[in-house]
Amino acid sequence: MKKLAITTIALASLVSTAYAAEPEFQGFEANSVNTWLANRGYRNTTTDADADQQRRNAILGAEKLDDQAAAAKVKEHLDRTRLLFPNFDSYPLYLQTTLLKCEANGEFAGGVEDPTVRTINTDNWPSAAQAYHDRAEFTEAESYFAAKDAYDATPDKNTPAARDLAATMSQYESRKNDRAALDRMQMNELAFLRYARETDIERTWKRAVILGNEGFAQSNPVNATTAYGMNRGLTVADYNDVANRQIRRNQTAGGSTGNATPPFAFTVPNSTGGFSDITVPHNHSFTFTLLDRHVVDGDVETVTFVNGKGTHINQTITLTSQGQVFTARAAKGPNELRILAQNQGSQGVNSGGIRISSPVIHGVVDQNVSLLTGQTGVLRVTGR
Image 1 (cartoon, rainbow, N blue to C red):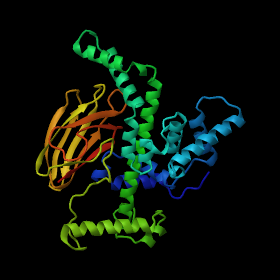
Image 2: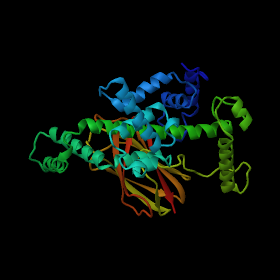
Image 3: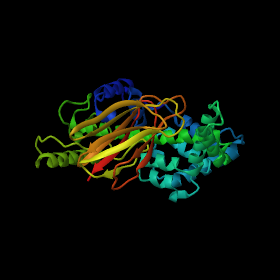
Image 4: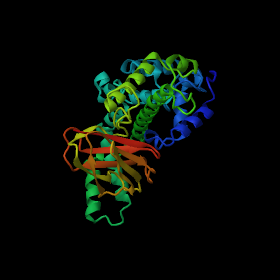
C-alpha cells in the first residue's frame, strides 16, 4: 500500500466545516471533499494491483478469456483509451474505469472527433456529461423507459395521457431491450458530473489555501513557498493564477489593488449539472419554468437566483410535469440560477428541466439538469 500523506478524515472534516456556509459549497458533504483529497494524493488505499484489476474488470466485465487473451484485450482497450484521452492516467480511478467501459462498449466510435471525447479533452466536464447524455442511444432509451414506467403505473390505459405514453413507447420501441444499457449510461453520466463537482472543489480549495482563509491553513495569506511547505501540492502557476484573479477583482471593484470589495462573480468556471451558459438582456425580467422532464417521482429542488444585488428567489418546490413559473431580474454582468437537489425522487437521479420564456441573446432556452441528492446545478446567466 502507498503511504498516507496526511490524515484525510480529519482534514476533510475541517474543509467541510470551513466551507459549510459558502454558496459554491452548498450541498457538499465531508465525503465529497474526502473524495477530492483522496483523488489528489492525500490518501491512496488502492494498490497498483487493485487498480489494474479494476481496469481489467471494466474492460472484460463477465467475459471469460484465458490469461493470454484477456491480457491482450485489456492492453488493446487501454491503448485505445489512452490515445483518445491524453490525460487519462491523471484521472481518478473511478473515472478511468468509466472511460474504459465506454470505449469497450463502442460509445466513442467517432474517435477524437466524438463530441464527448472532444469536450472531455477541453476539461469541460459539465459539457462532456451533456454531450454524452445527448447521444441518441441514451436519450431514446431514456424516453422509452420513462414512458413505459409511467404507462405501466397508469390504471386507465384509455386516457389521453396514457395514449401519449404509448405513442412515445412506439416511437422508441427499438430501445425496449436497452434497460441495462440505460442503467450503465446513467452511471457513466453521473461519473462525469461527479468529477465536474470535484474539479470545482479543487479550484475553490486552491484559492482558499493561497488567500489564507482555508479553515485549516494559516490565518494570514500564504505565499507559494509556504504552500509547498504545508504539503498542499500547489504549483507556482496555481499561486500566480489565484493572485492575478484577486488583483483583477479588486481593480474591477475599486480601481486599485487595495481593500475594495470585489463585485459579484461567478462561483464556477462553467455552468454545472447539465446546464450551459446563457446571455440575457440586463435589467429585464428573467422568466423561466422549472419542471420534471421525465417520470414525475417526487423530485424536490431548492431554486435560488443571485447576483450582485442580492438573492431574488429562494424557494423549495416539488417538480411537476406542468412546472412552476419564476420571475427574477437579471443584473448587468454575472447572475446565477442555482438548483439544489433535496432528493432523487423515487426513480433515479433528480432530473428536472428549465424552460426560459423571456428573451435570450445567446444560449439554449430549454435545458435539463441531472443531480444527485445534495448536489447543486448552476446556470450562469450573463446580463448584457
